[in-house]
Image 1: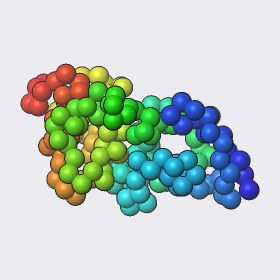
Image 2: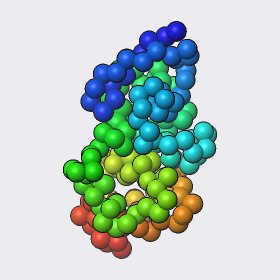
Image 3: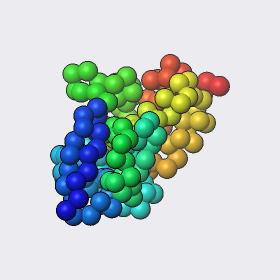
Length: 158
């Protein structure tokens, strides 16, 4: 049994795991009850499991939990609340940028990483940043509008 201390959503959390190479996704969902991060493909190809690690978008389904010890991990639960959503979450709500919602947390986290490094991205930059996040419902146009709204830009602006 290995003990890991992870800083998640601003709080140091200690978890015990049989294998320190357990994917971060499983530790978040199963040990810390942070279920907003979803399992999609398990191969880092769909983006449903995206979280922020030191401000970078990381696919938690392939990141060993031990690899984030000492780093700041932020999940969708760490961005805002229903009463006080993060401005990006508020933009997703305003643009109705979710249908089934399964991919939404990963999209928001990837977009949050983009906006942290590029506060006023162009539409092509948003498309590139979200290229690895898949949505089977076809909400991509609304997602792009939401990210641009959160940045203060409008679709088609250069």
